Length: 223
Image 1 (cartoon, rainbow, N blue to C red):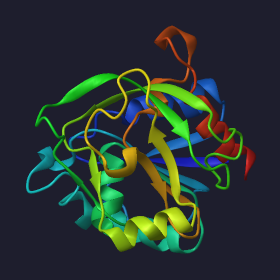
Image 2 (cartoon, rainbow, N blue to C red; image 1 turned 90 degrees about the vertical axis):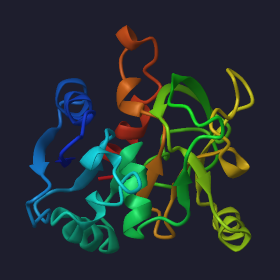
Image 3 (cartoon, rainbow, N blue to C red; image 1 turned 180 degrees about the vertical axis):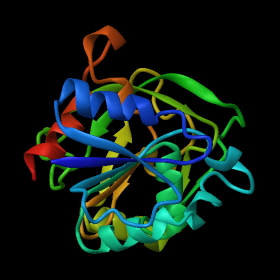
């Protein structure tokens, strides 16, 4: 399976994602600069965390117009797996590939801490190796991670089993005020995942948690 890790001006988790795919999972991976136009040669796409374009306007709002995003949207609509992590989640929302919005955290502070996630669905490329209700520990690092959507959208997410992860009511619970404790969602086709916590930063024991590796292993196992 060949992965593309996108790189925008201000990305700072691209090397973390690359390391996990290449050095831990021994899979093929390339960095792809945001001014490129074609992702057709890749089997999966990772949009990493960071501060694309300095998070001016809104987080992810400028990156959404980078040339590479036309190909991301095309490949996602064709069913290719796409995972957006932290700023990547924000970019996916801004691009319309995922519903809702990500607002400033409830206490208007940048948060950098470990959280505990609860797995809400195993019916996706990204969670097929997990168990319903399984807890995963991994870090967050964001200021605009407060997920919000209107009532109709939230009902649709619930009815269609599109909530991938919530913040569990342990280890501090919901840190940012996200509605329904949402930490990650998937699209209707179930091939696009956006999540605020960082699984790539919880993929080996030296980081005090390797819970995140299961998400990438699920992607590879589904290929």
